[in-house]
Amino acid sequence: MDFGILGPVEARDGAVRLDLGGVRGQKVLAALLLAPDRVVPLTHLVDVVWDGEPPSTAKHQIQKSVGDLRVVLGSPAAIATDGAGYRLVLGSAGLDVVTFERHVAAAQDAEPAEAVRVLRTALGLWRGPAMEGLASRALRADAERLDERRIAVAQQCFALQLELGQHAQVLTDLSALVAANPLREQLVEQLMTALHRSDRQADALELYDRTRRLLASGPGVEPGHGLRKAHQAILIRRRSPAPDAPAQLPAGPAAFTGRQSSVDELDACAFAVVTGGPGVGKTALAVHWAHRVRDRFPDGQLYVDLRAHDDGPATTAADALAQCLRALGAPRIPVDPGERAGLFRSVLADRRVLLVLDDAASEDQVRPLLPGTPGCAVVVTSRNHLRGLVALDDAHPVGLGPLPADEAHALITRIAGGEPDAVAGLAAACGYLPLAIRIAVANLGPDRIADAATDLARGDRLALLTINGDRRAAVTGAFERSVRALPEAAARLFRRLGSLPGNDFTAHVASGLVGVDDARGLLSSLESASLIEAHGRGRFRVPDLLHAYARSLCESENG
Image 1 (cartoon, rainbow, N blue to C red):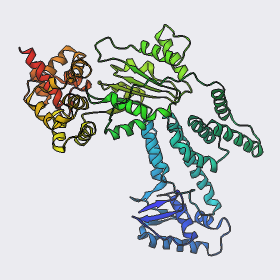
Image 2 (image 1 turned 30 degrees about the vertical axis):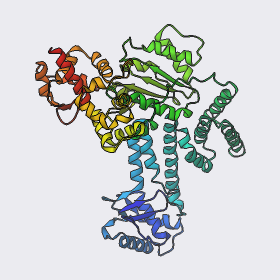
Image 3 (image 1 turned 180 degrees about the vertical axis):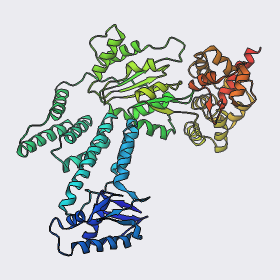
Image 4 (image 1 turned 120 degrees about the horizontal axis):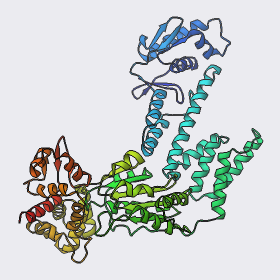
C-alpha cells in the first residue's frame, strides 16, 4: 500500500489507485496522513471536514468515514481507534512525504552531482500542490507548509545545478516555478543567472524589470540585495566584455568511440578526475568531452599539460598558473605562487571557463589551479588515483580501464573496417587498449586487418605496437614512463610480476617475489599508479599488455 498527499490525496494498492469516495473521506484520510502513527483527535477531524460549522451528526459521519476507509484499505487495523481519536497505522506502507524527506536528508551529505540526482528524485514525487482539491481551513496551513518545503528544496537543487554549470538544464523547471511564484526573489535571481549564463542577457534584464514592477505594485518594496547584485553583474558584463576568450583545447581524437557512461558522468559534475592506466584513453576522453561542451564555457577553455609522465620535468603548479593567467589576459603575473593562485581565482570569479589539466602527478599539483567560485568546470587526467581530491575537494572520480570488447570492436571497424572475426582477434591481441589498437591499425593498414592478430600473436607484440619516429605512439613508451615514476621497491615488484605464468596473483605471492613479509604497501603503489587492478579479497591482476611488458623487463633483469 502507498499513500500520497504531495498532490491530490490518494491511496494505491500496487498499480491500482483506490476509490476513496467523496471529499469527506479524502479530508479524513489527509488529516490522518499528516500525522501517521499518531493519534488525531476526533474533534480535529470534525474541524477538518466542516471548518468549525459541524452538523449535529458530525461525530457519527466521521465514524462512518473511518469505517468506509477501513473497507477501502482492506483492513480494520489500518486505522486504529485510540481513545477519543484515530491513528493511521502506516506499518510497511509508503507515504510520499516521508520518502520525500528521506531523499532530501540523503542529499545533504552527497557530492553535488549525486545530490542533484537525489533531490530531483525527491521533487519528482510531487504530482501537484499538496492535498490539491481539498478546500479546508484546517488543512490549509499544512498544505502551505508542504508547498513551501517543495519550493525550498527546488531552490536548493537549482543552486547546485547552477554550481555544476547546468544552467541550460534548469531553465524549463525554473521558468515554470517563477511564473507560479513571481515575487520569490531567490527563484528570480536563480532564473536571471541561468538566463545570463545561457547568453540570454536581454531576457534576464527584462525579468528583473518585470519583477521590480511587481514588487513595487504589490508589496511596495524595492528588489533585495541579492537580486540587485545579480542585475548589476549582468550590466557590468554587458558593458565590459571580457577579452578574447582562450580556446586552448587540442584537437579532439579522431573516431572517438564508446565511453558513453564516462561521458555522462562528466556531464553531471563540475570537477572530475579521470584515472586509469597508460594507454586507456584518459586524455582522449577529457578532450572529446571538452569539445562537446565548449559552448557552455564562453569565457574560455584552458588546457595545461602537467607532464607527470613526460621525459622532461613536470609542470609545476606555479608555472601552470602563469600559463593560465597569461591566456586569460591578466596584466601582471605575481612572483609568489600563493599570490598567483589568488589572482587566478579572482580572474575566474563570475566567469565560465573550462580547465583541462592533463597528466597530473599529485593532488598538490592540482589544488592551486582550482577555481574558487561556481560557474567553471575542471577535468583532471592522471595515471594516479588522486584520492585526496575526491576526499577533500569534492572531485568526482571517473575510472577508465581497457575498452569493453564491443567498443573495442567498434573502434577498429570505424577506423579500419575488417571482418568481425578478424576485428575481434585484433582487439584481443591489443588487450582492448585504445592506444594499442590505434597503433596496430596505423602500422598494419586496413588491408592487413585479417592478418593483424596472427602477427601480434606470433611476434613481439610490444615491438609491433610502436610507430617508428614518434615516441608518444609506442605502447612501451607509455608503460615505461609509468614504471619510471615508481619508487624502486615497487618497480622491482612490477618487474618480477613478469615471471608469473599468468597475470592473476595474490598478495602472498607478491610478497614472495620480492622477499618481504608483507607487500601490501608495494601493491598499493602499483594500484595507485594504475599498473595493477585489485579484484576480490587479496587478489590482483596485471592487464594483459602490461604483463607482457613486465615479462620483458624481468627477462632483461635476469640477463
